Image (cartoon, rainbow, N blue to C red; front, top):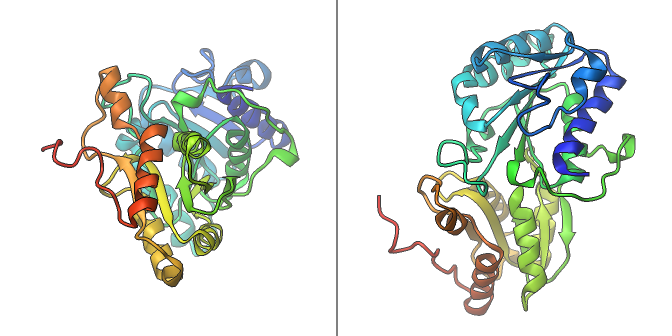
Length: 334
C-alpha cells in the first residue's frame, strides 16, 4: 500500500469495528481528503459518520472534543499541521485537561491527524513538523508515522486510545509503498520504538521522514548503527533507547525540526541522566537550522538532513570523539 492508502484503510477498519468512530475535517468526505487519506469512507459509512466541515479548525476541533467527551471517537483531520495553531486551545487547554479536571470521570478518545514536513515545495507556512506544539502538553499522546506499515498500526492504536492523541503524517511519504499487515496483527502499541537496523558504533534515533534518511545513511556508511524509529514521542520508549546506547556508547538524534526546542533535546537529556557512564562521546543532534523552511527546491533539500549529511556527521563523531559543527555554522544569520 501507499501510506495514504494505509491510513484510510486503518480508519475504515476501526469504523467497521466500532460504530462510535466518526471522521471530521475539511474535504474529508466528498473529495476523500486533500491527500486521499479518507478514500472510500463516505461511500461506505455515509455522511452521518464522515463529515465535511467549514474552514474553521477551532469550530470543528471543539465539536470533536465535545463529541469525544460524550461517547464518540472522532478522527479529525488538520490539513496542514500549521492550521492546528488556531485551535490549540481546544486541544491543549480543553481536550487534554478534561480527564484531569473531572477527577478521571471524563475521557476524551479523540484522534487528531495532521500532515507535516518539508520536501514537496509547500513553502514556509505549510512545511513544518511542529511536534513542539503538542509535546509539552500533559494529557496528550503523540505519534509520528514513518511509512505505510506503522501509519496503519499507529492510527488504529490512536483511535482505540482513551486519551486525545495526535498523529503526525509526513506528507512526502504519502506516496511511499511497502507491505502492510492489516487487522489486529498490524496494530502497534503507542510508546514502543522499533529498531530498523542493527549495529555497534552508534545509536541513531529518528522520527517520521528522517527514519528513512537515517537508514539510508547507515546502509551506505563505513560505520554501523542501531537505527531506532521512535514512532511515538509522548510517551517515548526510554528503555529501548537507553539499552541501545548502553551497548553502542554513542547517541545521535536525526530531526527534521529546527535545532532549538527540538525533540532530540529531551532524548539527549534522558540518556545522559540514565546511562552517562556508558557514553564514549558526547551526544550528537543532527537537525535543520533555526530558519523558516525555504520554498526553493535546492534550498529546501539543503534545509533537511540528507542521508549524505547524516553519514558525514556520524563519521566525524566516530572519528574525532567530538560533536562536529552543523553545516550552517557561520553561514546562517538572523
